[in-house]
Image (cartoon, rainbow, N blue to C red; front, side, top):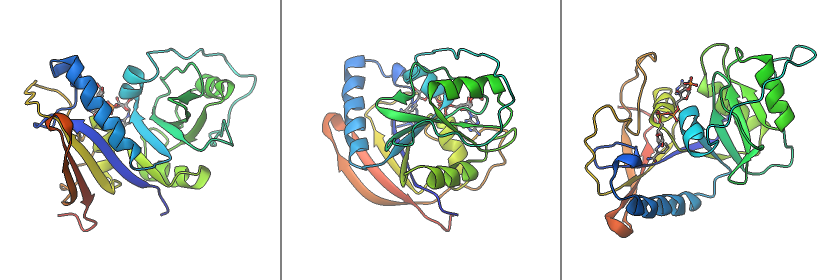
Length: 236
Ligand SMILES: NC(=O)c1ccc[n+]([C@@H]2O[C@H](COP(=O)([O-])OP(=O)(O)OC[C@H]3O[C@@H](n4cnc5c(N)ncnc54)[C@H](OP(=O)(O)O)[C@@H]3O)[C@@H](O)[C@H]2O)c1
């Protein structure tokens, strides 16, 4: 299968937790986020991907879709909203919940990854907004199919997978991540029930853990460590 190279890029506390609102000083969090963005830029990727929860919280500002019934049924085939786009924000939104003000996030054209069970009203909404979409699964998402379509339909060679923990865990579980780029911030979080870098939901059949090979380690400002690992293809 031809798929983009997938780099999971995340920032976590020393105990693996990823919710920065628990990390005390928001000034310091801003500095950590600046370092996170600087590291992101070094990869020269064409796309970044986030789960519905992260998109809603950090990028779509909780906007609600404006749903109108189309004149005729809409086929479950991919829709390309901007044929000229060269950089992409990919939203994993299995059930079609996200609303958007425009068809880009942070200057990157939005692609929604959906299941076929989303309503015609939602597809019509995305079409009217000029937002691209693909289908990856009937009821449940199949990320292998999603990645194959992203490589085939768009000029995407590298994707930064940027959380949250559930989306990362789903791709981990399917063995689809090639590299982990992890910024460890000098915080011991300890908050119970907080998502970690990889959350593999109980609804997924669990694979064995993945074995990683350290390929780079750097100390950044503010006592942040930047670790880069390659996923070993032969697992454990
Ligand atoms: N520290 C960092 O570097 C970093 C980076 C990114 C995000 N975050 C934080 O992470 C938090 C959100 O993480 P999260 O794990 O709760 O949510 P998430 O991974 O952003 O989104 C998960 C959602 O994606 C949809 N989904 C559908 N099928 C899925 C599947 N097979 N696997 C995974 N997701 C699927 C589901 O949406 P439906 O509920 O609509 O079905 C699910 O609720 C946010 O607070 C955000 O700020 C931290």
